[in-house]
Image (cartoon, rainbow, N blue to C red; front, side):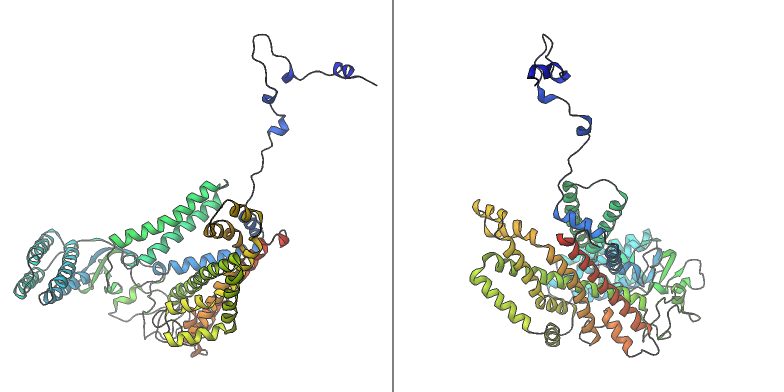
Length: 545
């Protein structure tokens, strides 16, 4: 048997543990470098629940495909004003019609202002001043200076109150200024963008940011940490709101009645003197038809039909083929499908948002407080479930009247019970776990425990239910529109187009097939995505396809 001295005698002490030379500070054994194989190994960061769910979801190729399909549908619906419109996206030229409209509007506003009280008079004078500014910006320098002088005179006169005599004098001066032939300035115009509302600006900014982030994520190979995700979430929240505020402040809300399709290029010398709009260049949308633009010459035309135009009709020069045909009064079906997607998809998202919010609050209260609160809420849920949801929606809409807001609210108020039961079950499961007990011991309030600690861990089944709920809400809205209780004319929806096609099944079958396929594809996509999300969020099914 060897003693310890024999063993030590046969070993060479590592350089790290060798005694320090005289004069050097003593060495610390804990400063020794790690072996190469250990130093090269970096600890793997801990993955969150949502990271694991996303990895499992991406393994399901069909779910990824239908998710892209949903993104395409949503993007087309949001960009519908830019894709299908009877106004140009941009043009450079002169808008004679807008100038003539301004002359008529100022004349009427001055006549009305002379008979209105002081408060109303100020509003009318302000509107007239806006028109004068627009007119001055459309003409050359000399008439523009005259119009600017008229505007200053209007402001000075209106300070002490505008009398009938003063209004008549201003109107007479306006007639004198506009009686002479004026030279118009060539400038850029953006009619489609000028017609957008604040809500359009919000969603256009939001979807543009989302598409940009998706493209950056596909191209980039870097891992996005929590700090980057927080910055992205903050930008997605703040940037669309800022764009909406700027749009509300700087883009005036006005009705544009200019017949842009009656305009001609400046090279067309024969029609130029009579044209309401002169174009040096013009960019039209991909589908140059409005959702309510009718053409009685093209009733029930097949997909791909192109208007031939009539001699002397300048509007025909800007028309494009009707790629999906026309309906009973000559409206373009592709344009109505794009605009109808805004209605159908918004009904699904807003209605689901309403009943998910209600279900989360009600289910959280029932599952957290238990006792008589749980008993009372559970009885209410059972009473609501007793009534058939679709017939209840039919009854309420019949009394309130068909409108987009009524349909979204009614679907939201009748569909919250399923989400409430899911949240209640999750809260009953999580309320006795260690992290909740620790929060109670630390004295956390009930709202903090509910919304900051328990609810984030209970949201997985709710998101799955929401994806199925969007499909159900779209189907409900389509059924209501098909029965004549949906969106009112002229606003289209896929169900309303389907209802119109029912009366012309033999002569225009595309009015049935196209919206029917869109409804089927959307509902199928949401159902497949919801099923994949449910499987990915279940630890027992991870790894299965």
